[in-house]
Image 1 (cartoon, one colour):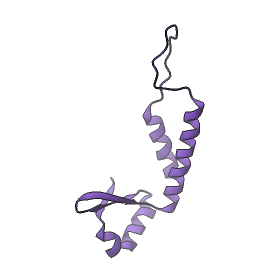
Image 2: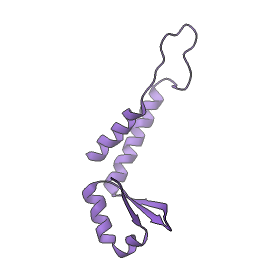
Image 3: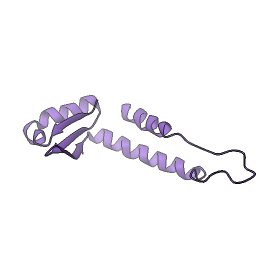
Image 4: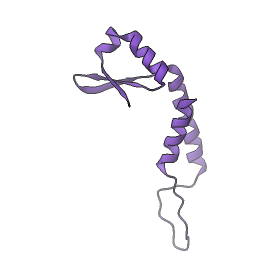
Amino acid sequence: MPQIRPISDLRNNFTEISRIVHESYEPVYLTKNGYGDMVVMSVELFEKLGIAALLIDKETKREPALSKEPEEGNSFHIQKPLSRWQKTLSDLAKR
């Protein structure tokens, strides 16, 4: 379950928010006037998400385009489910 806190907690409870992002290995969402304003996460999680994005980008560039329908005479259509990428990000975040 995501942590959602008012932005004032960043100033008033910085140590607690720091502990949460490091122990839970999940981001904390901060709100301002009831609306989402920013996300705080550990450097480790940030770096792993960046690495995951690079890996996904490389994998996507190696695969054929997915947006076109199969051409006539082609009986197959390549499709990669989004859940595969979500699983990749989730697995990297847990390491």
